[in-house]
Image (cartoon, rainbow, N blue to C red; front, top):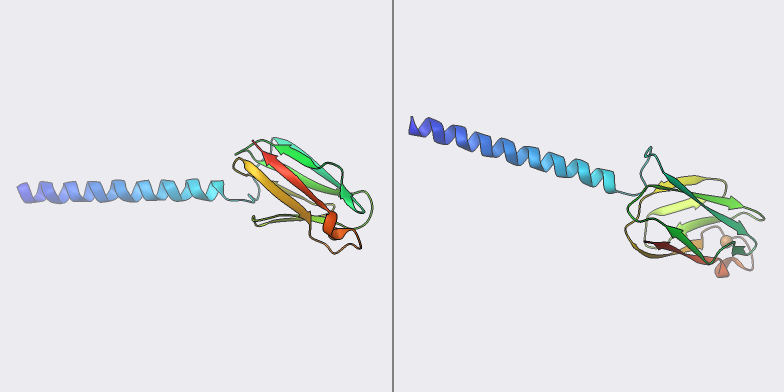
Amino acid sequence: MQRKLAYLFTLAVLALALTACGGDKNKNAGDSTPVAGEAASTEVVVKASSWEFDQTEYALPKDTPVKLTVENLSGAHGIEVVGQDIKIRGGKSEVINLPAGTYEIKCNIMCGTGHAQMVAKLVVS
Ligand SMILES: [Cu+2]
């Protein structure tokens, strides 16, 4: 009898451990960026022209899905969030979700003589 109880207890503990792991996995999947299909509550538009972005800093809310859109006013540009796996071509959007911090963005399409000076910051707070 004692043995059977011990066995049942072990099963219960194992079941709990498995459930806990599964829950964590799902949570991590939800936190990854960029998140396809996640509904964004805000949109930030980066307007690019040859050869600058319309702002030197873009403010984004932290840990929130944000629709980041790149609009080309002149020339063909795109952005890359340095250190993150986020690249958006002009005319396209991506829903991103970043923790607090300051991120550098730069043009990731070779667009001509001023290409290297096309940098700005994403201030996430
Ligand atoms: Cu460029």
